Image 1: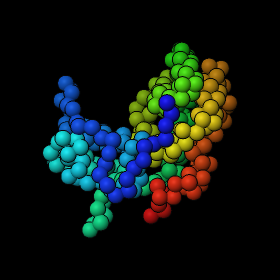
Image 2: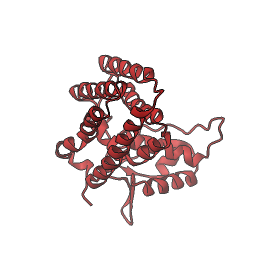
Image 3: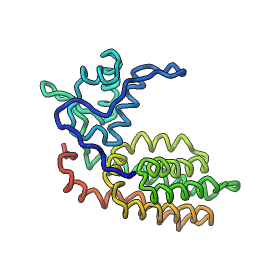
Image 4: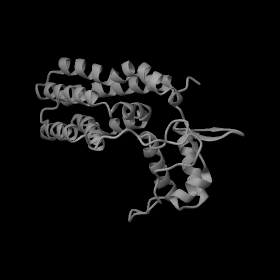
Length: 243
């Protein structure tokens, strides 16, 4: 079912986190901690402004302090965690200026990928069509997590069809702030319906190799977050900062 993000304490320990389990790939513990914290911040399981305690995270993840400290340092570099001397460590609040910059990067890379995919002579659209069907099921079943994953997969697939999967990784690294805004809007059923309509139009334009039509839809699609930003700031003022 679609649910709003769980309530978060504004000064307590980080909840909704599980002990770290190392898999057969032998990833570094600090990488696993980083991935878990990054995902929790992106999904709003850790809300903007939430206080993060190094000792509490150590207990939550059942690891030593060193990997937690290393992961937090990387999150600071990524702009997702803020450390204030003599105050403490918190999940960074969302900066509108960073949202606008991330949207600019995403829009231009996505337009380029779409045009490249249109020009590719052997594009197979079956996976895109299957993802639209999956999004329809997620909408019908009120499955927010499935819709979010399918949304990501559709955009990633366009980059792959264009022959530039690495460019999608660049977009991913820059759009974490956008994703936090998306999580605030996904519980809105009407917004999800509009997103599916726009995704369908993008796929139809790609099938027709209509670059002009695709550009028009994509521009409106990826700029949607900017039109929603003032409302979200008004509804969730404690999640945002201009500093």
